[in-house]
Image (cartoon, rainbow, N blue to C red; front, side, top):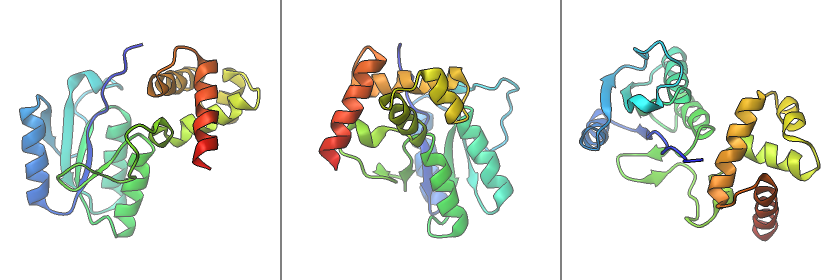
Length: 182
């Protein structure tokens, strides 16, 4: 499996910071659009290399931004991370992957570069925990209310993070790193 690069997810404090990030992403080949409504009718927009940007001031805009990110679009959101809306935005986007705070490369959840365990999203951790307990992928998916396809995709991403070929090796690597982290 070739792992596609994560779409950028930035939460910044000001419009000037957003402009800085947007210009940098445009130079890197991303298509930039203002607003968080997706123009495409297809669900997965990762191949379009699309970045949506704007100000998040209410729950409706927050939901649009998170939905766009879940569909594969990059996000540059102007929002106060200390507000309730900002905390909800960072929390929801963090479930999808790494979130950058500010125009630089400051991660929302600082992680050790060599620590694949810190890179796992909560769904992957839950699936790996269930697999470690002896569940099949199908049983783990059902218990976590995920489709089998999504569960297989999350496990494949975990295998890529750990640099292993099999699911069993991924579970063992997960358990080994979890023990050393405790």
